[in-house]
Length: 181
Image 1 (spheres, rainbow, N blue to C red):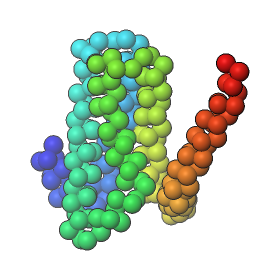
Image 2 (image 1 turned 90 degrees about the vertical axis):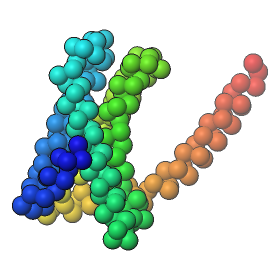
Image 3 (image 1 turned 120 degrees about the vertical axis):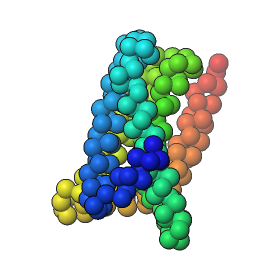
């Protein structure tokens, strides 16, 4: 995988790399959906090998690209800025989610409804990963996607505070409703 990352990075320019990454991420999303659906149906891993092997390869390639990007950012002194980037976290989670569903299915750590919910979150992450590549299509879309990323980073702390307040009120209501029991 490291050789593939190096060979793609040395091609004629960044456009080639971006187009290759876009194709890999599109394939990763499609294969993720196929594997999740096959696992949902209860198919064996041997039957899914035509989808699982490319999924593993693409996830490894995407992970290597993330690590290479972080190393480059660290060399340029921009690591902290890179770690605060919402799109980078979405990209990383989308790549990490693929092996997670395979491990959860093979070890049977969760029941069917939990597994379906985990697969749904993974599909949302893959779609968000593809959304980040819409910045390449036009300047108008790039502005909208960048604005969405800024909104998400600004709301991240607010959502955490709101979750704590909602959990506190939920527990309080639970105690009040169960007084007579």
